[in-house]
Length: 163
Image (cartoon, rainbow, N blue to C red; front, side, top):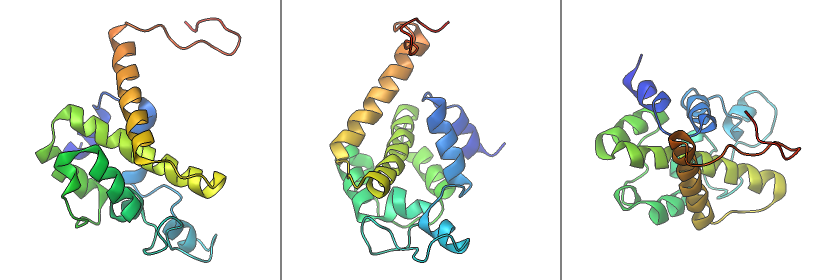
């Protein structure tokens, strides 16, 4: 198995984050470029910045809105330019510069950026970088608490705890 995929599947994050990274790394997300190539939409331009074509790398790294997110979230990342064009190459670079806990945070923030993009498109609401950072922190903390057995599992809809 490619070491990049191994590091993604071994992350200490919720499975939905790992699955998101897998879809993003395989270019399986419904970006505007992917939808445009399938003739589903007529315009591949990013709906947030209106400047570049919306690829997965644009949403997660190149878009000025993503840059604002990274500038607020992590000092080691904020000065990196938008050089990479491939998510898995970027991930390999990140692996060489960040520890595993920081990589986990990057993955959760990337999923948060994708969720923010969807919220903007479908609900016309734009989440702030601080709300995404808070979501990332809480997701990781909750995951670790559940793994360590210090938190009860979430209740089901009927109020009973799931077994």
